[in-house]
Image (cartoon, rainbow, N blue to C red; front, side):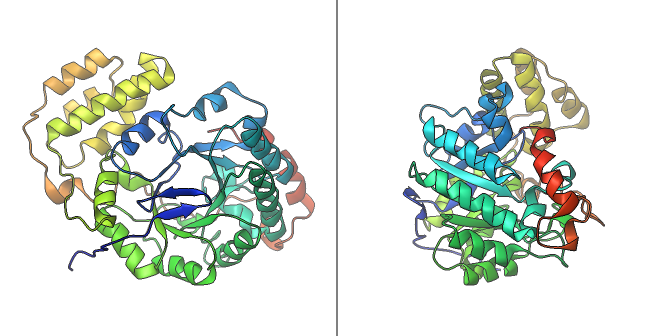
Length: 388
Protein backbone atom coordinates (compact mmCIF):
# COMPACT_ATOMS: atom_id res chain seq x y z
CA UNK A 1 0.00 0.00 0.00
CA UNK A 2 1.39 3.39 -0.91
CA UNK A 3 2.01 5.78 1.95
CA UNK A 4 -0.85 8.25 2.41
CA UNK A 5 0.09 11.89 2.13
CA UNK A 6 -1.37 15.24 3.03
CA UNK A 7 0.22 18.26 1.49
CA UNK A 8 -1.27 20.90 3.75
CA UNK A 9 -2.96 19.68 6.92
CA UNK A 10 -5.19 22.25 8.53
CA UNK A 11 -4.14 23.54 11.96
CA UNK A 12 -6.03 22.11 14.92
CA UNK A 13 -8.11 24.77 16.66
CA UNK A 14 -9.44 24.09 20.14
CA UNK A 15 -11.26 27.22 21.16
CA UNK A 16 -8.75 30.08 20.94
CA UNK A 17 -5.78 27.70 20.97
CA UNK A 18 -4.14 26.61 17.72
CA UNK A 19 -1.54 23.99 16.85
CA UNK A 20 -0.13 23.92 13.30
CA UNK A 21 0.16 20.14 13.66
CA UNK A 22 -3.22 18.46 14.37
CA UNK A 23 -1.93 16.11 17.04
CA UNK A 24 -2.77 15.52 20.71
CA UNK A 25 -0.78 13.45 23.18
CA UNK A 26 -3.28 11.27 25.01
CA UNK A 27 -3.23 11.44 28.80
CA UNK A 28 -1.68 8.23 30.16
CA UNK A 29 -1.47 7.50 33.88
CA UNK A 30 2.10 7.25 35.08
CA UNK A 31 3.42 8.28 31.66
CA UNK A 32 2.46 11.80 30.57
CA UNK A 33 4.06 13.70 33.41
CA UNK A 34 6.00 16.88 32.69
CA UNK A 35 9.20 14.90 32.00
CA UNK A 36 7.69 12.86 29.18
CA UNK A 37 5.69 15.80 27.86
CA UNK A 38 8.91 17.81 27.55
CA UNK A 39 10.56 15.08 25.48
CA UNK A 40 7.56 14.96 23.18
CA UNK A 41 7.12 18.73 22.89
CA UNK A 42 10.72 19.09 21.78
CA UNK A 43 9.97 16.89 18.77
CA UNK A 44 6.94 18.62 17.32
CA UNK A 45 3.97 20.89 17.90
CA UNK A 46 0.64 19.74 19.31
CA UNK A 47 -1.43 19.56 22.47
CA UNK A 48 0.35 17.60 25.22
CA UNK A 49 -2.08 16.59 27.95
CA UNK A 50 -1.28 15.84 31.57
CA UNK A 51 -2.09 12.64 33.39
CA UNK A 52 -5.70 12.30 34.48
CA UNK A 53 -6.44 13.83 37.88
CA UNK A 54 -9.61 13.56 39.91
CA UNK A 55 -11.68 16.65 40.45
CA UNK A 56 -12.11 15.98 44.15
CA UNK A 57 -8.37 15.52 44.67
CA UNK A 58 -7.77 18.83 42.92
CA UNK A 59 -10.37 20.68 44.98
CA UNK A 60 -8.87 19.20 48.14
CA UNK A 61 -5.35 20.06 46.96
CA UNK A 62 -3.81 16.67 47.68
CA UNK A 63 -0.01 16.97 47.39
CA UNK A 64 0.32 14.31 44.70
CA UNK A 65 -2.33 15.94 42.55
CA UNK A 66 -0.77 19.38 42.89
CA UNK A 67 2.53 17.89 41.73
CA UNK A 68 0.88 16.12 38.79
CA UNK A 69 -0.56 19.38 37.47
CA UNK A 70 2.84 21.07 37.43
CA UNK A 71 3.67 22.52 34.03
CA UNK A 72 7.04 23.73 32.78
CA UNK A 73 7.48 27.49 32.46
CA UNK A 74 7.73 27.19 28.66
CA UNK A 75 4.90 24.67 28.30
CA UNK A 76 2.10 26.08 26.21
CA UNK A 77 -0.71 25.42 25.93
CA UNK A 78 -1.06 23.82 29.35
CA UNK A 79 -3.52 20.97 28.87
CA UNK A 80 -4.98 19.24 31.90
CA UNK A 81 -7.25 16.19 31.96
CA UNK A 82 -9.89 16.04 34.66
CA UNK A 83 -11.91 13.08 35.86
CA UNK A 84 -15.09 13.23 37.87
CA UNK A 85 -18.54 11.72 38.34
CA UNK A 86 -20.26 14.43 40.35
CA UNK A 87 -21.30 17.56 38.40
CA UNK A 88 -20.84 19.91 41.34
CA UNK A 89 -17.34 18.66 42.14
CA UNK A 90 -16.22 18.78 38.52
CA UNK A 91 -17.57 22.31 38.16
CA UNK A 92 -15.80 23.34 41.36
CA UNK A 93 -12.53 21.90 40.06
CA UNK A 94 -12.85 23.82 36.79
CA UNK A 95 -13.72 26.97 38.72
CA UNK A 96 -10.48 26.51 40.67
CA UNK A 97 -8.48 25.97 37.48
CA UNK A 98 -9.83 29.24 36.07
CA UNK A 99 -9.45 31.26 39.27
CA UNK A 100 -5.86 30.14 39.88
CA UNK A 101 -4.75 30.01 36.23
CA UNK A 102 -3.74 26.36 36.50
CA UNK A 103 -4.24 25.44 32.82
CA UNK A 104 -5.09 26.81 29.38
CA UNK A 105 -7.21 23.83 28.30
CA UNK A 106 -9.26 21.27 30.22
CA UNK A 107 -10.13 17.83 28.88
CA UNK A 108 -12.80 15.70 30.55
CA UNK A 109 -12.14 11.97 30.83
CA UNK A 110 -15.04 9.76 29.74
CA UNK A 111 -12.83 7.08 28.23
CA UNK A 112 -10.97 5.29 31.00
CA UNK A 113 -11.81 1.53 30.97
CA UNK A 114 -10.02 0.63 34.22
CA UNK A 115 -12.30 -1.36 36.58
CA UNK A 116 -11.63 0.82 39.63
CA UNK A 117 -13.05 3.73 37.61
CA UNK A 118 -15.93 2.06 35.75
CA UNK A 119 -17.25 0.25 38.82
CA UNK A 120 -17.85 3.71 40.29
CA UNK A 121 -19.70 4.81 37.17
CA UNK A 122 -16.81 6.89 35.89
CA UNK A 123 -14.72 7.00 32.73
CA UNK A 124 -16.16 5.06 29.81
CA UNK A 125 -19.15 3.92 31.90
CA UNK A 126 -20.46 7.42 32.59
CA UNK A 127 -21.91 8.50 29.21
CA UNK A 128 -24.48 5.71 29.56
CA UNK A 129 -26.19 7.97 32.08
CA UNK A 130 -27.09 10.61 29.53
CA UNK A 131 -28.39 13.26 31.94
CA UNK A 132 -25.40 12.86 34.25
CA UNK A 133 -23.04 13.24 31.28
CA UNK A 134 -24.89 16.36 30.14
CA UNK A 135 -24.84 17.90 33.63
CA UNK A 136 -21.09 17.34 34.02
CA UNK A 137 -20.24 18.79 30.61
CA UNK A 138 -22.65 21.71 31.05
CA UNK A 139 -21.27 22.73 34.44
CA UNK A 140 -17.65 22.34 33.37
CA UNK A 141 -18.17 24.37 30.18
CA UNK A 142 -19.94 27.09 32.17
CA UNK A 143 -17.02 27.50 34.57
CA UNK A 144 -14.33 27.16 31.91
CA UNK A 145 -15.97 29.83 29.74
CA UNK A 146 -15.61 32.36 32.54
CA UNK A 147 -11.87 32.28 31.95
CA UNK A 148 -11.98 31.76 28.20
CA UNK A 149 -10.62 28.25 28.63
CA UNK A 150 -11.71 25.66 26.05
CA UNK A 151 -13.12 22.42 27.42
CA UNK A 152 -12.95 19.17 25.46
CA UNK A 153 -14.34 15.67 25.90
CA UNK A 154 -12.51 12.36 25.39
CA UNK A 155 -14.60 9.19 25.27
CA UNK A 156 -14.93 5.63 23.99
CA UNK A 157 -17.60 4.07 21.79
CA UNK A 158 -19.47 2.88 24.84
CA UNK A 159 -19.51 0.17 27.48
CA UNK A 160 -19.78 -2.71 25.01
CA UNK A 161 -21.28 -3.35 21.59
CA UNK A 162 -24.77 -3.53 23.10
CA UNK A 163 -24.41 -0.25 24.98
CA UNK A 164 -22.89 2.29 22.60
CA UNK A 165 -23.00 5.93 23.64
CA UNK A 166 -20.56 7.85 21.47
CA UNK A 167 -22.97 9.44 18.98
CA UNK A 168 -25.38 10.63 21.66
CA UNK A 169 -22.52 11.83 23.85
CA UNK A 170 -20.87 13.60 20.93
CA UNK A 171 -24.05 15.49 20.09
CA UNK A 172 -24.53 16.40 23.76
CA UNK A 173 -20.97 17.69 24.13
CA UNK A 174 -21.41 19.79 21.00
CA UNK A 175 -24.75 21.20 22.20
CA UNK A 176 -23.34 22.06 25.63
CA UNK A 177 -20.44 24.08 24.26
CA UNK A 178 -17.48 21.72 24.27
CA UNK A 179 -14.66 22.93 22.02
CA UNK A 180 -13.80 19.48 20.62
CA UNK A 181 -14.57 15.80 21.10
CA UNK A 182 -12.15 12.89 20.82
CA UNK A 183 -13.14 9.27 20.28
CA UNK A 184 -11.10 6.19 21.05
CA UNK A 185 -12.51 3.65 18.64
CA UNK A 186 -12.94 0.88 21.21
CA UNK A 187 -15.50 0.04 23.87
CA UNK A 188 -14.70 -0.29 27.55
CA UNK A 189 -15.08 -4.06 27.26
CA UNK A 190 -12.33 -4.18 24.64
CA UNK A 191 -9.88 -2.37 26.92
CA UNK A 192 -6.97 -1.96 24.44
CA UNK A 193 -7.38 -5.27 22.65
CA UNK A 194 -8.39 -5.90 19.07
CA UNK A 195 -8.50 -3.22 16.40
CA UNK A 196 -9.74 0.33 16.83
CA UNK A 197 -12.96 1.03 14.94
CA UNK A 198 -12.08 3.89 12.62
CA UNK A 199 -15.50 3.60 10.96
CA UNK A 200 -17.07 4.66 14.25
CA UNK A 201 -14.74 7.66 14.33
CA UNK A 202 -15.92 8.57 10.84
CA UNK A 203 -19.57 8.30 11.95
CA UNK A 204 -18.90 10.64 14.85
CA UNK A 205 -17.29 13.13 12.47
CA UNK A 206 -20.41 12.99 10.29
CA UNK A 207 -22.60 13.54 13.37
CA UNK A 208 -20.67 16.33 15.11
CA UNK A 209 -20.25 19.10 12.58
CA UNK A 210 -19.59 22.40 14.37
CA UNK A 211 -16.54 21.55 16.51
CA UNK A 212 -13.37 19.53 15.82
CA UNK A 213 -13.56 15.75 16.08
CA UNK A 214 -10.37 13.87 16.94
CA UNK A 215 -9.61 10.20 16.35
CA UNK A 216 -7.76 7.92 18.75
CA UNK A 217 -6.68 4.30 18.46
CA UNK A 218 -3.97 2.36 16.59
CA UNK A 219 -1.90 5.36 15.52
CA UNK A 220 1.54 3.77 15.59
CA UNK A 221 3.21 5.90 12.90
CA UNK A 222 2.85 9.09 10.91
CA UNK A 223 1.45 6.99 8.07
CA UNK A 224 -1.27 5.64 10.38
CA UNK A 225 -2.20 9.19 11.38
CA UNK A 226 -2.45 10.34 7.79
CA UNK A 227 -4.53 7.30 6.89
CA UNK A 228 -6.90 7.90 9.80
CA UNK A 229 -7.50 11.47 8.64
CA UNK A 230 -7.98 10.31 5.04
CA UNK A 231 -10.45 7.58 5.97
CA UNK A 232 -12.45 9.36 8.66
CA UNK A 233 -12.18 13.06 7.87
CA UNK A 234 -11.24 13.91 11.48
CA UNK A 235 -9.67 17.22 12.34
CA UNK A 236 -6.76 15.67 14.22
CA UNK A 237 -5.40 12.55 15.85
CA UNK A 238 -4.82 11.57 19.46
CA UNK A 239 -1.70 9.48 20.08
CA UNK A 240 -1.32 7.25 23.12
CA UNK A 241 0.60 3.98 23.24
CA UNK A 242 2.25 4.64 19.87
CA UNK A 243 4.70 7.08 21.44
CA UNK A 244 5.77 4.87 24.36
CA UNK A 245 9.56 4.75 24.17
CA UNK A 246 9.32 6.85 21.00
CA UNK A 247 8.88 10.54 21.78
CA UNK A 248 10.35 11.24 18.34
CA UNK A 249 7.06 9.99 16.85
CA UNK A 250 5.87 13.59 17.18
CA UNK A 251 8.65 14.71 14.82
CA UNK A 252 7.39 12.16 12.30
CA UNK A 253 3.83 13.39 12.76
CA UNK A 254 4.81 17.01 12.25
CA UNK A 255 6.69 16.10 9.07
CA UNK A 256 3.89 13.87 7.82
CA UNK A 257 1.15 16.44 8.29
CA UNK A 258 3.36 19.04 6.61
CA UNK A 259 3.70 16.72 3.60
CA UNK A 260 7.40 16.08 4.17
CA UNK A 261 8.89 12.58 3.72
CA UNK A 262 11.55 12.58 6.42
CA UNK A 263 11.11 10.27 9.42
CA UNK A 264 13.23 9.73 12.54
CA UNK A 265 15.00 6.36 12.40
CA UNK A 266 17.33 6.36 15.42
CA UNK A 267 20.22 4.02 16.01
CA UNK A 268 20.71 2.57 19.47
CA UNK A 269 23.09 5.33 20.52
CA UNK A 270 20.41 7.95 19.93
CA UNK A 271 17.74 5.84 21.63
CA UNK A 272 19.94 5.28 24.68
CA UNK A 273 20.63 9.00 24.87
CA UNK A 274 16.91 9.82 24.93
CA UNK A 275 16.30 7.13 27.56
CA UNK A 276 19.08 8.61 29.72
CA UNK A 277 17.65 12.12 29.38
CA UNK A 278 14.17 10.84 30.18
CA UNK A 279 15.54 9.34 33.40
CA UNK A 280 17.23 12.61 34.34
CA UNK A 281 14.03 14.56 33.72
CA UNK A 282 12.07 12.07 35.85
CA UNK A 283 14.54 12.49 38.71
CA UNK A 284 14.02 16.26 38.53
CA UNK A 285 10.24 15.85 38.30
CA UNK A 286 10.11 13.73 41.45
CA UNK A 287 12.91 15.58 43.20
CA UNK A 288 14.26 12.14 44.05
CA UNK A 289 16.85 10.16 42.07
CA UNK A 290 15.70 6.78 43.32
CA UNK A 291 12.06 7.43 42.46
CA UNK A 292 12.99 8.78 39.04
CA UNK A 293 15.12 5.73 38.28
CA UNK A 294 12.39 3.41 39.43
CA UNK A 295 9.99 5.15 37.07
CA UNK A 296 12.29 4.85 34.03
CA UNK A 297 12.40 1.07 34.48
CA UNK A 298 8.98 0.58 32.89
CA UNK A 299 10.08 2.50 29.80
CA UNK A 300 13.12 0.29 29.05
CA UNK A 301 11.33 -2.35 26.99
CA UNK A 302 9.53 0.32 24.95
CA UNK A 303 12.70 2.23 24.10
CA UNK A 304 14.65 -0.91 23.16
CA UNK A 305 11.87 -2.65 21.20
CA UNK A 306 13.49 -4.27 18.16
CA UNK A 307 17.10 -3.60 19.19
CA UNK A 308 19.57 -6.34 20.10
CA UNK A 309 19.58 -5.81 23.83
CA UNK A 310 19.73 -9.17 25.60
CA UNK A 311 17.47 -10.41 28.35
CA UNK A 312 20.18 -10.18 31.01
CA UNK A 313 20.87 -6.56 30.15
CA UNK A 314 17.17 -5.71 30.09
CA UNK A 315 16.80 -7.30 33.52
CA UNK A 316 19.67 -5.21 34.88
CA UNK A 317 18.21 -2.05 33.36
CA UNK A 318 14.94 -2.96 35.07
CA UNK A 319 16.67 -2.68 38.44
CA UNK A 320 18.57 0.61 38.09
CA UNK A 321 18.39 2.86 41.13
CA UNK A 322 20.86 5.62 40.23
CA UNK A 323 21.76 7.58 37.11
CA UNK A 324 25.33 6.40 37.52
CA UNK A 325 24.20 2.78 37.40
CA UNK A 326 22.16 3.55 34.29
CA UNK A 327 25.18 5.17 32.63
CA UNK A 328 27.32 2.09 33.35
CA UNK A 329 24.78 -0.24 31.78
CA UNK A 330 24.30 1.96 28.72
CA UNK A 331 28.08 2.00 28.21
CA UNK A 332 28.00 -1.79 27.90
CA UNK A 333 25.49 -1.75 25.03
CA UNK A 334 26.46 -2.09 21.38
CA UNK A 335 25.56 1.51 20.70
CA UNK A 336 26.55 1.35 17.03
CA UNK A 337 23.44 -0.67 16.16
CA UNK A 338 21.44 0.98 13.37
CA UNK A 339 17.69 1.38 13.34
CA UNK A 340 16.24 -2.16 13.10
CA UNK A 341 13.31 -1.28 10.86
CA UNK A 342 9.95 -2.99 11.27
CA UNK A 343 11.05 -4.72 14.49
CA UNK A 344 11.07 -1.35 16.26
CA UNK A 345 7.71 -0.27 14.92
CA UNK A 346 4.08 -1.26 15.34
CA UNK A 347 2.06 -1.72 18.50
CA UNK A 348 3.52 -1.33 21.96
CA UNK A 349 2.23 -1.18 25.49
CA UNK A 350 -0.22 -3.55 27.11
CA UNK A 351 -3.28 -4.39 25.05
CA UNK A 352 -5.00 -6.39 27.79
CA UNK A 353 -7.79 -8.84 27.11
CA UNK A 354 -11.42 -8.20 26.23
CA UNK A 355 -13.58 -8.12 29.34
CA UNK A 356 -16.54 -10.47 29.32
CA UNK A 357 -18.26 -8.06 31.65
CA UNK A 358 -17.30 -4.47 32.46
CA UNK A 359 -17.20 -3.66 36.17
CA UNK A 360 -20.18 -1.35 36.78
CA UNK A 361 -22.29 -0.12 39.69
CA UNK A 362 -25.23 -2.32 40.60
CA UNK A 363 -28.11 -1.83 38.15
CA UNK A 364 -26.11 0.62 36.01
CA UNK A 365 -27.40 -0.74 32.70
CA UNK A 366 -31.04 -0.92 33.77
CA UNK A 367 -31.70 2.64 32.67
CA UNK A 368 -29.92 5.60 31.12
CA UNK A 369 -31.28 7.72 33.96
CA UNK A 370 -29.39 8.01 37.24
CA UNK A 371 -31.53 6.47 39.97
CA UNK A 372 -31.42 4.26 43.07
CA UNK A 373 -28.23 2.53 44.13
CA UNK A 374 -26.31 4.00 41.19
CA UNK A 375 -27.20 7.54 42.24
CA UNK A 376 -25.94 6.96 45.77
CA UNK A 377 -22.74 5.39 44.45
CA UNK A 378 -22.06 8.43 42.31
CA UNK A 379 -22.31 10.63 45.39
CA UNK A 380 -19.67 8.52 47.10
CA UNK A 381 -17.48 7.72 44.10
CA UNK A 382 -14.97 10.54 44.16
CA UNK A 383 -14.19 9.83 47.77
CA UNK A 384 -12.76 6.43 46.85
CA UNK A 385 -11.10 6.82 43.44
CA UNK A 386 -7.48 7.83 43.91
CA UNK A 387 -5.94 10.71 41.99
CA UNK A 388 -3.60 10.22 39.02
